[in-house]
Image 1 (cartoon, helix red, strand yellow):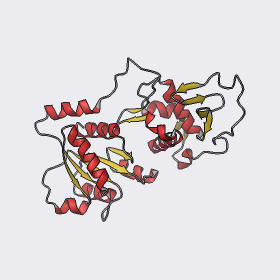
Image 2: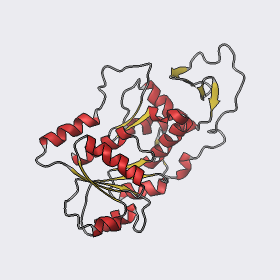
Image 3: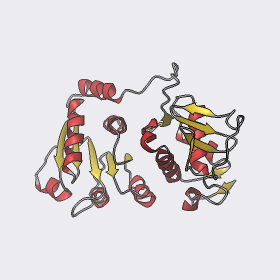
Image 4: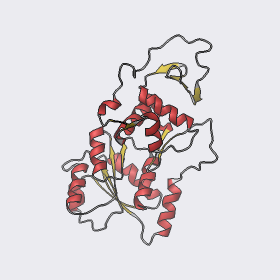
Length: 270
């Protein structure tokens, strides 16, 4: 077995790079898989949007094909790793990087790729309904948790962007959760906030102590809260550090509501 942990796995090589556009013939796209305005052409390893080639790396294309062949079901991370990196052992951060690359290749349609926390990924296809795979409804699941728990789950959000802080607070309150929001770690610590959080949502880049620094501080004192990180400036090293230190999930901005609710639901029921 070939074992690799190098970040180079994520970097396109000359053979992995985006193939140059070529003139289409009548039979060029006979094996194309359509989804929305896109077509994925396996034999030429091309992604087309309204017939125009889009830049996509080889690994990201392999990931796309795995998700397309799943026909709308949730594909586990292990299944993707085995298909995209056969006979190799790679770190999960490589998969996260390729998911991000695929979403970038899909442009404004990147939200077709859904992260199902602790379960895997799925591609939402308007042209296909999978009756055997019920859609995970995070809002309903959280509402059930709120109704069955003795006390309303308490969420602490530390986010320095006021608009993001307000948006997340409104979202979580709308599903019945109790939330306290703060601009910085210092503001949270100086508030005298006594309630123990069932989940912490931390921005990585904060004034003063960063979210990662605060995570380290909590670990030193023996406090292990479920932590969900959000960041608009994440890189592989940052996400690896957070996950190795026990973070529950690491989401990139702009955060999709469904992804955040799914992560919170899993965290408060962990």
